[in-house]
Length: 595
Image (cartoon, helix red, strand yellow):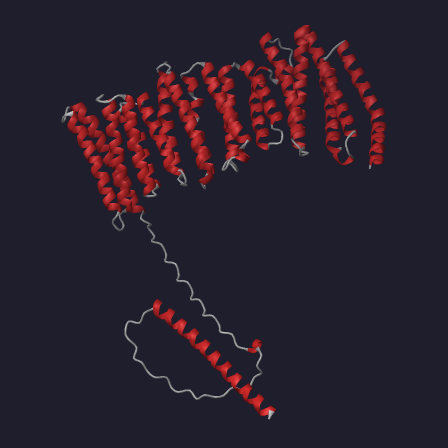
């Protein structure tokens, strides 16, 4: 009785399992059919045909366990459609024609405002009203066209032309006809330019913003009959109102256009004043404002831009007028402006790791710009005899203040190279070969610069944590030359051209051998693994001292100087030979006991 009852339950269980599996498969097929019909609808109705009857066959009995139950399979996702290939021209022909139309139309507006006024064609009111009406009509048509399919390119061109035409009209009203004062004209220009750039942001069009700024750089000077202070003010106002429009946008070319709108008029105005031998404090102030605007704009926009190198270079172009104010300004004013610029850029470089976007190539570019600004400040403020020591002192300060920053070391090295170039201009190698009388100013500058050059060679090696043999060798050569120049200059100042020259070279040779001894002592006090570099430097100095002793001192020096230099150098070499091995063994034993 029990066995037939269990057999019936097993058959019923198997039947339900088969039905469940069959319904799951039917559900999956219906889902797939629905998706295919929605993606590819049939053009003609398909007549319905009843499917052939499938005879039912009872499946074999299976045990009733949940893990044996078949699970419905999810429908397979359809492959995504292949992306369409973009058009080959990408609309560049339309954009090119639109830009050409902007240029030609704006030239026509300038001709209407300027040449018509010169020829007396039409009344001023008609010319101004005609320019304003044309500007409004162009913007209105552009806005209408923007809402039409495919009208974006033409709408941007028309709107840019209308905005630039309105801006030129305001410039003419202010500068040619004098109907409004300069402050009112600046406000109106800022409003019009800001409105055009706001439209560019609303349409998300960098091209519109660029087309608003760039034509004015070329055409506005024609309206104002040259670069004037008022035109510079117009450009600064337009550049200022263009900054908020760019917030949150990666519009690098709009930033470049902003810098061009500031830099070109300022540089041309500075050159014009320089050739006319005039100065203008207001123009100098405009240069400072333009540089400040360029730096602030870059700091705000760097986190969002994908081309930080170009933005850093464009910002460097924006501060260029400050570096050129020496053409028209007092030396003190020009030097102070360059120093402030160098300090600001260097401060940004130092804290760049805490400023968003000031990383990568931006910091080296601005560090180099800071070094150039500092060099220009020194060159403007001082003559050659003072500029050399000042630049070397600045290099030491930068190297010590930021010894952990590789960029700061490069800045310091650049300052030192320029300072050393001035140093070599009045202390050339020929002074070490021939006894030459020098002026007191040159001698004092040589002595100070020699000491600073020696100090810089020591500091730059100390600031570099890497055991770079090339840097050590370069520092040793620089220090050796500076020591020799110092001793010879002191000898000539004290003893005259002949006796003092000999005494100076005697002291130089002794200093060389003493430096070699100091390197050997230093090598004995450091771990064995680090000794190769100072020992190599010491041996090189010993070889150089011996070569100088026999090739130069023996034939050039005479009398007591020749005797003294050989005796002193010989005694030092004897002391080094006798004491170095003992000192080295003693230091090694102490280090082994500490380990």
